[in-house]
Amino acid sequence: MARISIVGLGRVGLATGVAFAKLGHEVACYEVDASKVDAVRGGRSPYREKILGEELRKVLKKGNFRATDNAGDALVGSECYFICVGTPPLDDGSMDTRFMTDASKGVGRAIKGRKDFPVITVKSTVVPGTTEKLVAPMLAKESGLSHDAFGLCMNPEFLREGTALEDTLKPDRIIIGSNEKRPGDVLEQVYSRFESVKWRCDIKTAEMVKYATNSFLATKVTFANEIANVCASFGLDSDKVLEGIGLDSRINPKFLVPGAGFGGPCLPKDMKAIISASKSLGYKPLLLEAVLEFNERQAARVVDMLERELSSLDGKRIALLGLAFKAETDDVRDSRALPIIHELLRRGATIVAHDPAATIAAFGTDLAVKQVSGIRDALENVDGCIIQTSWREYKELDKEDFAMMKHQIIVDGRRTLDGKKLPKGVIYRRIG
Ligand SMILES: NC(=O)c1ccc[n+]([C@@H]2O[C@H](COP(=O)([O-])OP(=O)(O)OC[C@H]3O[C@@H](n4cnc5c(N)ncnc54)[C@H](O)[C@@H]3O)[C@@H](O)[C@H]2O)c1
Image 1 (cartoon, rainbow, N blue to C red):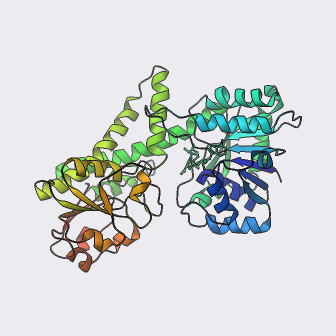
Image 2: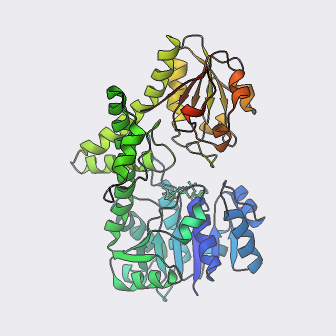
């Protein structure tokens, strides 16, 4: 079993650390945010996750998992390091490398003078070239070691929020990117108790596999939206059409669900970063740009549908159900709720929002939106309603809930309700 250090206790770092500890490794986590360290030490996951908190408590009890904001304590003496810090976008869409730089410096200082070949793995999503051009030189500079005195790997993460630990423990594949055999072998050994297929490649390929995966998923969602919009023009039921194509084993039904578009902390950010990096190298990725642009328009289409029912949104009171980018998370990063809010406000509507977990404050910008804690408080006396997140609570909306509305008009951006089962009098519209 290996001594492992994790840098950054976001969802990725925490799920990775708990997974390794669960499988018997000795794990020390370094996180700069003391409040997260306190939560994790106290056995509380800072993230809304299914089993992460429970499994965290087990490994804390077992004694082979710890978290600290003391770099020396967490980083000195480990055999393997996993860099799991954030790679958010800058204003121009390119990747902000600030956290990667700091994390690499921290690990570099911790491995100073080492003669036993520590292996450093980048798990964060980074544009091709980052591990070799930014991380490796920083490690060498801060440690004083030559490049062949430490190992370097890239191991992208594919977990989904809400099931972070489940996905980390049973990924579809474990991508092991290394330019030399030795560090790749060390990483494969660390993962030896994972049943998933281990797939080896070079570092830059591993970095790109992550972007290509997210670009494909974003494109697939957008394709479903495009087909749904076309079906609507033909008066066709797009669900039936998409079901028909999803039966093709080359296509499969996953991610073929039309709606208000994709959001969250990964797909939009990663698309922007790879488009920006690609353009800086002289290639304009037309398809990927179109996917992003289409996605922005799709949010406006939801508002258009409501406007059509009400003739105008000016002065209208609208309920927005769902702020999180998807159900079972409180994460609002790049949630489609934000462009929908902007569109509604621009067209003169007032908004009453509801979400079982996410808050309007989490958008970090001043929005003229009232958030209420009860679904009926949100629906009371409104001219219409948009469902943006398919929370279970919204699937259970009933006659009494709709009776709170002044006009019973629902635009469902997430296929949350079954239009055929709604009470008489409810006008139900959805994408496609
Ligand atoms: N969240 C996801 O669903 C997901 C899925 C797959 C891949 N990823 C990628 O993995 C990476 C991490 O994602 P996340 O959601 O866990 O990120 P996050 O931003 O939520 O968490 C990163 C953590 O690292 C800490 N940190 C920053 N600099 C540090 C430093 N120098 N030393 C120690 N700690 C430091 C931050 O305080 C933060 O708690 C990103 O590149 C992301 O794109 C995320």
